[in-house]
Length: 320
Image 1: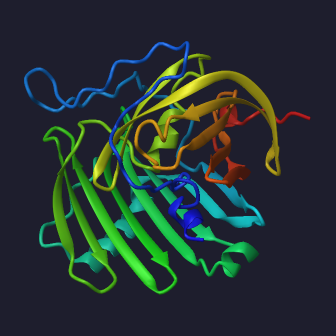
Image 2 (image 1 turned 90 degrees about the vertical axis):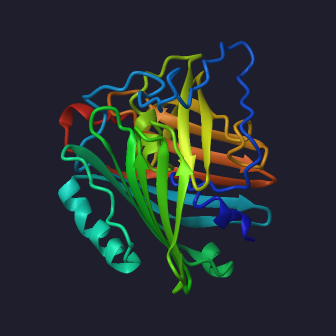
Image 3 (image 1 turned 180 degrees about the horizontal axis):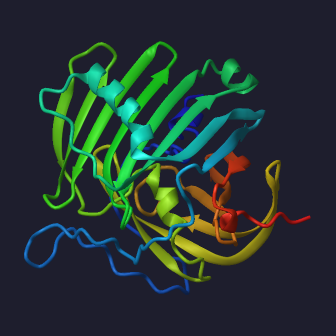
């Protein structure tokens, strides 16, 4: 049962990881396709502007903390899979984790400088419960991403991935105006591998994807042209805002939520043909309250079980 683990708790944000097979993108019937995101300007320099307007104030702030619980169902097995905790932190709070990884990797070149006015996102994901124990899954991952404070474009990310006794360390620096990224990676006690890969001038990663998505209006019928960089590939990953609204009840409360559909299979992000759905609260905070991935007889569901919002005006209205 390696399939649940390859979903990375359903893509870090649901930690979805899959084999890659091209970037063919389809749009739901009856909807207008958006223009593809260009890698460069006519002059040949990287396009650093996001594919849609992104401007502060954002529907999140430093101090926000969201806790999700994931479950898996695949006959005859079902049960709790793990927990994911997402936090918005200041650059000062992010520095110790960055310094610790630099000390472990000991890069030959200094790590890329962080902006003076950026936003950092921290995440911890781990397996919990009887089902992971039965399947001998013990995953304890930690993530840190830093973005520009103006357009949320990715500048830096790092990952510490632990599965039982194995550990993988990764650090990536995005050179937005140069169209490249430098990836430092170490598996176990092996040597540090350094790679220089092509990059978009503006992109998200698996963690910042969900925060950027929250900045977009939830207009029914809209197709949000998201860009995602994961490992060696860059994806144009459309997100369709459906007309469907549901009453989602979790242990964190009851929310009126809009259903979104991620075109994960059509974009080549996952090789498993199925549905990847997200429900976002229809309020100022636009909280992702439920996510669900179905493919090959497996259903992975994540639900919001707790949240801390420091801005009172963003606090969702609890519905009975």
